[in-house]
Image (cartoon, rainbow, N blue to C red; front, side, top):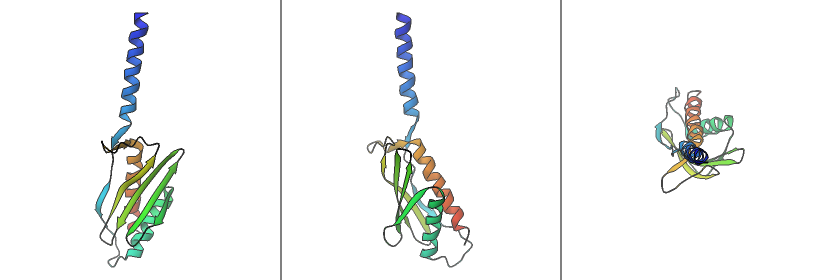
Length: 132
């Protein structure tokens, strides 16, 4: 009986630890410099590159004004929403909202998969900007 209690305590601790490992500080992209072979890159060029980058990864990109768009990613029952601001020199990707990603506003934490999605988007934007 005592062994079962000890095993149950260890199992509970392991479960809490495993859940905790899936949470990480939110990864935002702040003012990443734009590198492009095109010397006279336009706002339209940057807009197109961000749209292409997002679409190729399953993001829905919606223009929200000059130099601003909102990206939404739906994966299974998870939703991530980001604000993307940009000009011809840099861009930023910042957390806006989420569903089922264990977001904690006070701690600035979220499920670690979110960070991977943002890093993939960031990388793909850089790649798209090199194709001008």
